[in-house]
Amino acid sequence: MQRLWIIFAQTATICLAVLFVISTLKPEWLPARPVPAGDAPRVALVQQAPQPAAGSAQRTDSYHDAVQRATPAVVNIFTTKEVRVSRNPLLNDPLFRRFFGDQLGDDTQRASSLGSGVIVSASGYILTNHHVVEAADEIEVALPDGKKLLARVVGNDPETDLAVLRVEAKSLPAITFGSSDNLRVGDVVLAIGNPFGVGQTVTAGIVSALGRSGLGINVFENFIQTDAPINPGNSGGALIDARGNLVGINTAIYSRTPGGASLGIGFATPVSTARLVLEQIIKSGAVTRGWIGVELQPITPALAESFKLGADEGAIINGVLNGGPADKGGARPGDVLVAIEGKPVTSPQSVLNHVTGLAPGTQAKMKIKRKGQDMELAITVGRRPKPQIRAE
Image (cartoon, rainbow, N blue to C red; front, side, top):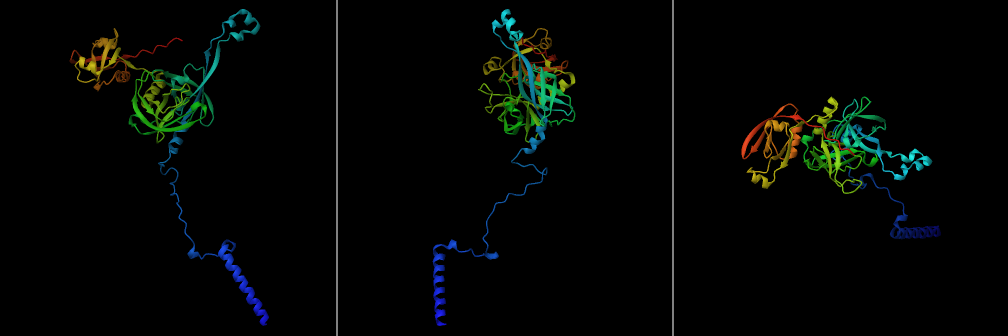
């Protein structure tokens, strides 16, 4: 019995020694001990705050809702037309034509281009740029859902580079018109279109400037300038505010590259101008503008001193069309146009924009300075002549 007790004691001593060595040198070899619930370690986690239900509030970090409102009304426009191409004079030789056929004498080919447009009426009216559909033989409109429709030109206005199309369809998703007059520099805007034909794309930026003119793009210029990227194919697309309302029609970009890549300076026609053009074209197929028949020159500080104006505001009338409205109303070359209908004249462009908004046949009061004397003329506004189409 004593012998068995000695063997047990030695065995227990050896086991305890092995356990001590393992727990000291290799504790990971031992099984983990369960931790009582009250002593469990606490881990700090950062949980995102619950998001409001859809439609209950607009997230400040996303313009998804605005885009969802506007994109169904923005379409892709594909146009084709015949263009003349130069041909080798040898192709006119009867011998060549005899052996190779008349196809060698063909001096036209089909050219295609793309742009964008905005559905402005559920009945099928679409607003786009004039240069997008100019001289097109066939116009095809692709809706965001992939459906394609043939379109016809209802009317165009080259002087604002706007055109109105019509497709035979009903219950189309029309965009909501916003107010370009309430835009401020720094407001967020989004440009929607089909750049380079990659498909409908949305870009974001801010309003960089308002009332841009003198760029030589259109006759009537009052552009919204934005840094939202506008690339080839975006022309005619929508410029929307942060709520998804239309505030402009994307028209042009400033670029130094042949392909016209965006450099952060884009121009859009204000929706206030686009709406006036749209309504007149739908009503009569054309745009009617006022006209008084004068040529104007901006006033420089030197001219202001010479005319004793005291300020460089206004515009000098340096030409009056014989028999035109201004001539009949008593205007003379050398007069300084100071105000129209009580609104101060700041530049020749401001006169053009204001006069064209007057209805032909109405009488407008114009304040002028002649030889230092203030005068007021009553001029009956005429109808602005249609722009001359340059022969190619």
